[in-house]
Length: 152
Image (cartoon, rainbow, N blue to C red; front, side):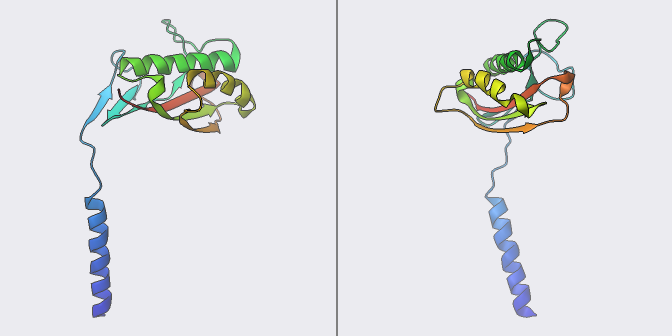
């Protein structure tokens, strides 16, 4: 029984030591480059040197904020322009993007989305990326992209 208690205490000590060395982010900034949010999320959050962007869809800059017409290529282009604009407003740029997640309403449009996507990044230094099909996106968009970028 004594050996079991000693082993348990050693295990707890090792676990505590591991967690004690994990840094805690204290420099978190919620960024609202275009004014107060109208929805319950921040467009960008900076934690240390990383900027996490909320998912973007291909809405235009007009007062209506409607998704652009023209299909997946037009929506992907507008989505990436929105990301580019947001990154610039919070102190980063497309060449600092390290990870993207792409949500698509129809995975059959993968090639058309990729044709536009690749024009926003420089080969061979594309960001890491995940992509998945979704059963419905906000405003019936065909594509939504979220990114993580390093600050300048």
